[in-house]
Length: 163
Image (cartoon, rainbow, N blue to C red; front, side):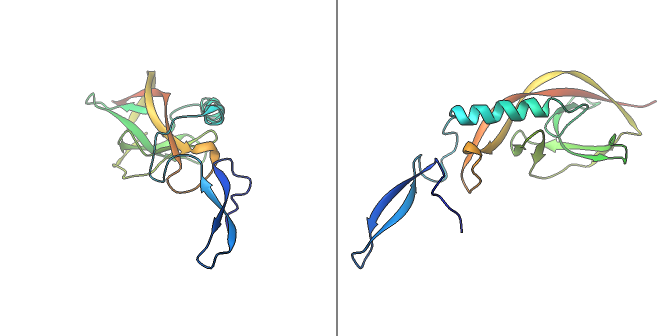
């Protein structure tokens, strides 16, 4: 059972049920379920700053970063298959601009994956930054319809075929 007692997103209210007995319930303080983009409050901004700082400590390409393909198209990285030493074996791309969850130092993509690019056939080089959308749970409280969206800077990598 979920406890709303210490959740800052809920307020305690007394209601009378059909039998006339009062009981305590917790109701959401912010707009109705399904409402997104309610805006970032101070706690959300603190969570965002912390998570972006941790994410930026990661070296090399990351899920959520942009990939400039050999044909010039720009897409986002959706998954990275790694070798045992941690280096990328294959990079999958093709996700839209949404569906990227920002966790503590990582990004996770939810959606379809295009075929990957085997790094044995390609070279990858960092070539700038570009803004990208992410989401996380409002005030770090996990429940349905409780997301907030943000835009953060992601790395851009150029992919070229090895000769």
